[in-house]
Length: 137
Image (tube, rainbow, N blue to C red):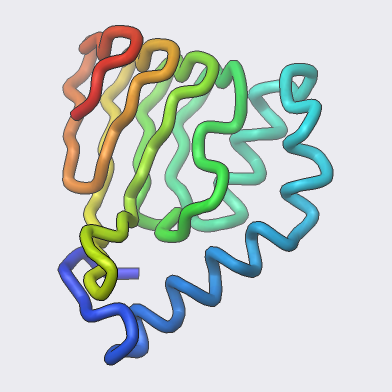
């Protein structure tokens, strides 16, 4: 993926995003993410790395933070970051019924993302920053 704003049905980027979202929702992800409270952070990090995300060392996940969205290769999480339960990270977002926006999401070293917090495309969370529970960027 590349960062930018694209018409969803008039570009290969839009078609690929829609196809990927449907493929992920039908994949093995749904089987092992249902009981994801028992999954170790190392397994979640390995899964996200396989999809192209850049995940640092010793990242702690309470749950899988990205359920049904594409653009994993636009995600960078620094060392020792903590992502709490039900936080949402969206490198790709439908901004209207016909526009899809891709943007890099960078979460710095030792950053903490709170419970039910939402980090959207284009966000840069600095080193040692805290995104409070329920907040959005």
